Length: 482
Image (cartoon, rainbow, N blue to C red; front, top):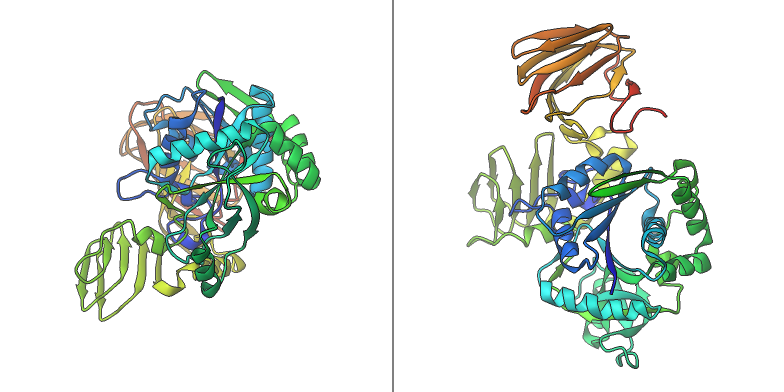
């Protein structure tokens, strides 16, 4: 069977703030073994891809991060495609766009295996078997979802109620009777006890045409603007992949709704494969903590700590020493610019912090102190009234856009590597310990022509230092106006 894995790589992961943020979302979160959730999902997809092709749906702003993450892996996948969303419109539009791209490339009967990028699956053989069962159902025109056999009355997951008998001639596949929203604890206990309720894993299998037909039937206000966005998309191809950048004007008209509400809960053609995959949704800091073994006091530690009379806490920090005295049942997550302290029983409420930050337009909900760009990274070292200092790292062969600022001037000092700089009418080459000054209003560009990282310090001065004071004229990454 022609199975094409489709990875949905979106969402801000607000319950995993301050590590997960809009510009560096949950799928990019690195686990203790050094691999991100996205990388683990990509490896899992590569093992079941019958065409050596994987399709990823992601936001236009995180495209290069996503591409770099997958490019670090050694797999048999020879072609990676990207569907780039100009704005988030939820999973129904994302899946609809992917279905149309797959239909165009592989035909209406191509089987799509849709997976979120932010889940863990420990039992690879069981997963491969479940995929084969689901693909057989999909080949017969069914929508098949994956239901996880529950191990506890979990209130953070939705549930699927299914018929006890499998479908005739379809071993391992059962008809879905209904979907149940995340329940209260007493309801969850009842559901687990019946033996006919599964956790909703949010993974699906169907042919491209089946999903397009179901969306047209149940959610035309999703699929019609989405199809138009695919038709008018900006496309590029290379030897190892392609990208389809959806048209913003059309895609913005698609209804913002999940695939569960748009299709799964409305269609009479939804089935489920019950399975035990060693599945983890990684939906909160409690789920993250359970990936670390506890010490004799029940603490799970991913940090340098000094603890006294501390029990059942999770502590994560990449840099600072964390000292704790006389506390219980806490989550402590430290990053260079934000610290989270939460009661373990309130882990789901971390998203409320992000909501408050958004209401006050605080960039801490969107950006880390170190910000990733297609060309490399910048780290804000210090800022104050009318000044900001950054450490900029430009990858070999990479280039910032040709740009201009209205409200700030910049001083660039090379620390290591070599820099080629456009500064107004001049083209300058700088070596370590050399610098240049760029007045406000000057067109400028920074290029790393070398084979090593270029590191420099940037000092900004001016009346306004926001990141939106950038006028782009040319950009090799497609961020300049057409």
